[in-house]
Amino acid sequence: MEKHDILIFSGQSNMQGQCEKLSETEAVDGAVEYRFLSDSFVPLRNPTGEDITYELKSGERFGCFHGEGVGWHDVHGLGSACMGYTSMVPSFVRSYRAEAGRPVIAVHAAKGGTVISSWLPDAEIYPVLFAKVRGAIAAAKREYGAVGRVAFIWLQGESDALCRTPGEVYLERMKILRAAAIRDFEIDTFAVIRNGPFASIVSWHHADPQEALRADQTIQEAQEQFCREIPDCTMLTRLITELVREERYLNPEAEGHLSALGLETVGSEAGRKLAEYYRGKEAE
Image 1: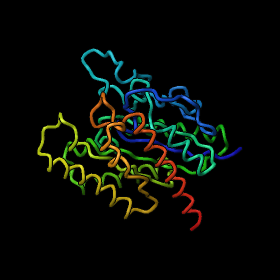
Image 2 (image 1 turned 30 degrees about the horizontal axis):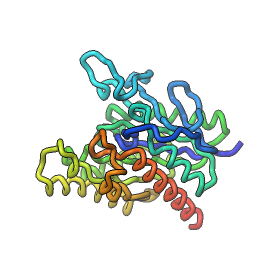
Image 3 (image 1 turned 180 degrees about the horizontal axis):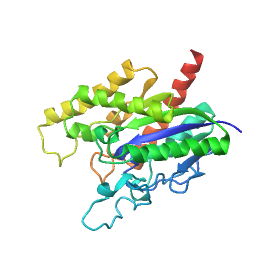
Image 4 (image 1 turned 90 degrees about the horizontal axis):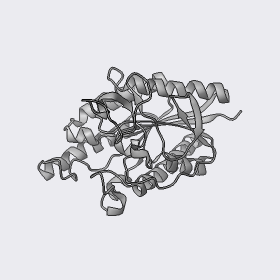
């Protein structure tokens, strides 16, 4: 049986998928998605992900939650693509497959509106992340005998810009998360999709524009430093910073978020770059 690469997609809303429509539903050839709630593999296609509560039970999709006196974020540890729309995962994997030619297990494990501290091993989300990723690894070994590469793909930081997390603090927390992912998920690569401006472009965030821009840049520079200095870490793309300048790449219904086209464009670029990164490692 052929080893499957495991690609873990984690972070906040742009990784979870918060766009304006379901753009396409074609299955990605040679790829599956792991579903924790059924402990099974399904064809990888939009919409991706699962709504998993902190109790590791099935929840409700973001935007359709009817809880009494609590919000969706209070109950859920991980979320599916919002409203059942598009995420970047299928386009990423399709591009990676085209370049690398390797079968893939995708693990969608993201949640919007989160700061990085919520993802650390002693915080509330990590046990849900741990359960899903460990479940995927066990299922891969059961189904395919062994796993191939294991990459942790991270797109997060907008909330930390809003909260003015200092750069050195964000960097240290990225290191902690990476160490946990190596220990618990046996990743060989921590790959970053650099977040774009957020605090400086959302109109509902009332702050001095220049100060908000500096907050965005602080998080971006921490991500850059992380990829420069830490072994087996790579910056996949900075494309989001460019895309937010064009209306067609932005979700008209959720300010500061990417549209379906934006998510697909970033996913395709990042998937290709991850394949190129691995090709370079093999050449070395």
